[in-house]
Amino acid sequence: MTKLDVVIRNGEIVTAAGAIGQADIGILDGKIVQIGGELEGELELDATGKLVMPGGIDTHVHLSSPPSLQQREPRWVDDFYSGSAAALAGGITTLGNMSFADPGELPMDCIQRDADVARGQTMVDLYFHPVLRQAIPEVLDQIPTLFESGCNTIKMFTVFPDFDAQIPAFMEAARRAHQHGMLTLIHCEDHMLIEEATEQLLNAGKTSMRYYPESRPVNSEVIATQRAVSFAEATGAPVYIVHLSSKRALDVCIDAQERGLPVYVETRPLYLHLTRERFEDADGAKYVGQPPLREQSDVDALWEGIRQGYIHTVCTDHAPWSLEAKLDPTHDLRNLRPGVANLQTMIPMLYSEGVLKGRISLGKLVEVTSTNVAKLFGLFPHKGTIAVGSDADVVIFDPELEQTVEASMIKSNAAHSVFEGWKVTGWPIATLRRGELVFQNGEILSQPGSGELIARGKTQAL
Image (tube, rainbow, N blue to C red; front, side, top):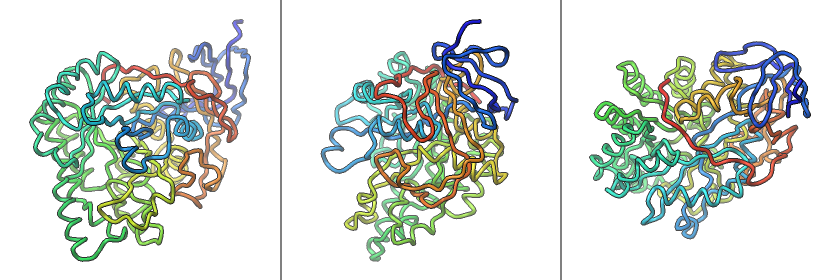
């Protein structure tokens, strides 16, 4: 019998199909090579009474920012190392980072810049999404090169002030991306409506964060989502709506999906666990994300959207700040710091608040945090499942472990969580990335630079 690198014994294997039974898993050279049968490993891990799931894939994080932004003001506090630590502790083994170009940078330039930094820091496997600030000819001409280099996405923001003036060019970007099997990510909020709403609030002296939801109203998300759907309808290009927050915007996507349009939807933990009442708190500014927290009816609709398959992924939009920066008293509705730390708590809270409360199935949790992401972002079946031949990205998950979220446990440099004080049942106790044990019992075991920068193939329809 060939001695394997790692054997995981006696765990209940879970895929997007649900719990598929108890079996040992054999790992060699970073791959799953055997499931069941006789196995012997150099390292043997006992998963009795535990769930064994594919590593999470969070395709929406912010672990870097352009040098020009870093010089102007404080930015997100996690680099690729600390962000990796938070991810591994949360059962996430692969990340997709948003890469913003500096003035004059083309998409390939900004990806290369981030890659040069990440290469020596990351402990997760990593890929990049270039953000298109301008759809100028030089940018459009690079889209084939992006795909050839292993990048299968572009991202655009309808909330950028100059987006409206470039709509034909952005539609052409989506069209060209589609021609190469790529996916177009779209941040859906309308700049004009947000500017108008914010101006009216400021003129009325309503400057505090308690008015933040009114400054970015639901209709700004709805209109921008309708525009994203129109891109898919006009060009045939698949579009991926990031961090959708409201029932009304989801309804737009459901209508599009039922008409057969390639519209994929992501939501994030903020919108599944919290409501706008948090902005009434004295520390309400720490909950600021874009879009804002919504009503309980929106929360309920998003859970149901996940259950029914209208929402395809749950990702964090992890963009953490220090608590001091979030609560800066000099900031108002025009000058705020959106983003929170989510990586370490996303999967545990989906299990605790979703699976245990009967909102979603165990298979659905795996589907929206791993399998669907792998398919949409050109990684399946190397990642996103537990199968012979797949990368050995594996999480051993204790479904009965109860922990209260505390600042002291947070691996992110943010050193706080918007979910502090929540009692959460179900946590990763071990994480393997390509067969290497990188997290166990609260400790990071990996080294900076051990993660790989990975290439992606064409988007797969779900």
